[in-house]
Length: 363
Image 1: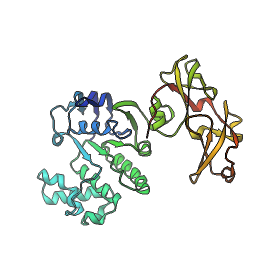
Image 2: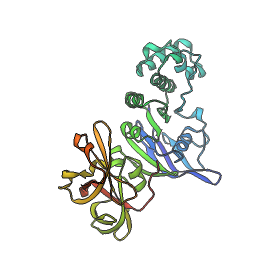
Image 3: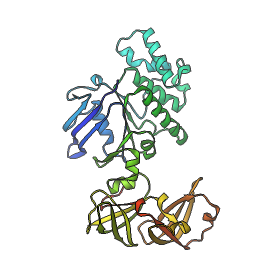
Image 4: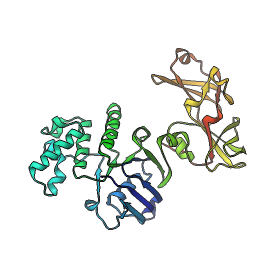
């Protein structure tokens, strides 16, 4: 069983500081939902309000349609996996998994049976009698998930559980978490500052900044159609041009910038005559001969190229606050460019978006 989680006008203050501000959101039953944002944006505070460790200053948290006010963590249909996992080193793996059942008075034989079933779900059936110290980091993560599932939660809450793992293991565990969630059907609510985790695993993502839920959407919507400058700059990389909208027809617009006048998609809230920002992803910024067929043209002085294996990031100075970036497939000739060499650049209107002037992400 899984349950819907609804936040209705939820605000949380700590003294004069507002950590979460007026969040309205419904997380669907059986959904993998991620809150994504930089440190201190309020995402963990939301998780703690859902779990019952703190109460909202205003608003209501509902799980399965039931008002959670006054209901403590041990009475809610939730399970919380902390960043440090909090496994018991002196217990074998199966007893770690079955600990919540023991607290509930379930007999040893039934506890063992249920623990083995859940270890099979997370593909650790052979580890039941091992000690926690004998497990790898990824295996410990899966034990923590099995232990949380043992109490049959309707909502699983995960607070940056992969942050301590190395890159390869994090990538592996992303797929494992998604597989486990799909197999069990439990509602997963995941907290992360890592956009790769959020975009890879989630059905939907909520991007937060300074306690405000900036945008909710599928990973594709968040990346390709950002609602605010913060979302556009936090989720993925972007070339940013400041200017003023000179023309708008409902879907397309023109913006006059310090590098010229460009056409692009009209984003949410941008209006003719007002200050605005143009965002172009590096993979959409064409370089050299590829720029010739684009709708928007400019040039830049080659600064440097960063080899990333299958692709190269080419940085060009263009009189902006930061160098412009074009991401291209690795080709030997790119690494032979001369510093200061003028290169043609371009992008298509459909590959760029104009948004109202706003704050950019710092992380």
